[in-house]
Image (cartoon, rainbow, N blue to C red; front, side):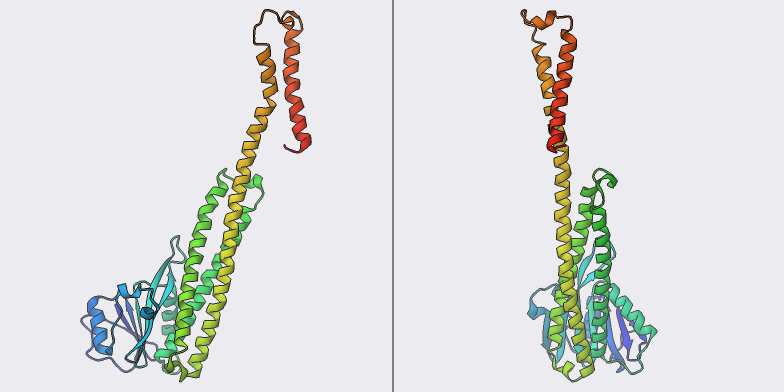
Length: 324
C-alpha cells in the first residue's frame, strides 16, 4: 500500500488501478507500507530511485544503511514494534530524501507512525510541508514514542522491584520468585531492543546532520540536533535501566538461593536433632543378653526420657548459637 501525503496534510492512497504516470508536485511524502514488488517498481519509475527491498533493509553494514546515491539520501533505522505486547520486535524502516520529498519503506506499523500520521492529518501545517521537515518531525515523534516506552518500562520495573523485595511472609505462591524471573527476562528483552533502536537512530541522525541538504535549513538542522540530543539522553537512561534489570536478576537469584538454603538448613538441623534419640533407641534395641537396664522397672521411661533430653539439648544449643 502506498499512502501519498500532500503538502497541506491531506492523504490519498495509491492503488494498482490509480497509479499516476507522474507524481503531483504537492505530494511531499510517500509512505510505502508492506509494498509489493509492483508498487516498488512504480515508485522507482516516478522518482527515478532504487527502492530498498525487504532483504536489503535487514543488512547491518553501515554502507548499506546510510548512503547517498544520485542526490538521494538513503537511511535505514531500526524501530521497536509491538512494545506494548509480550513479544516486542525490531522492524527496519527506510527513510529516503529525494527531490524535496520523503519516502518511507516499512513492513510493520510502529505506533510512532500512527501517532505522526494522525497528528499530521488532524492539524495541517500553516505553511506547506517539505520532505526534510516531515522527516525531522517524524524522527521527533519516534524519539517521543521511544521515551514513552522507556518511561512505562521504568514504572513497571519499579513495581516489579517492590514485589521481589516484599516481606517473605507475603510472597505467594511458593514459586513466587521463580515466576518473576520470566518478567525480568521480558523487560530485559524490551530494553535490549530499545537500546538497539536508539543506537540505530543515533547513527542515522549523525549521518543526517552531515547531509548538505539539511545545512540549508537552519530550523530543520536545529530540530535534528535536538532529536539527536534526546536520543543520546535516552540511550544513557536505557543503559541505566538495563543495569537495574541486571541487579534485579542477581537479587532474585540470590533470594532464591537463600530460600533454598533455608529449606536445606531446616532438614539438616532436624536430622541432627533427631540423631541422638535414634542413637539411644538403637542402643536399647540391640537385644543383648547382658544389658542391666532391660531388667529395670523404670528402664523404659528412662530410655524415653533420654531420647527426649538428647533431642532438646541440641535444639536449644542451635538456638543459642543463632542457627535457628
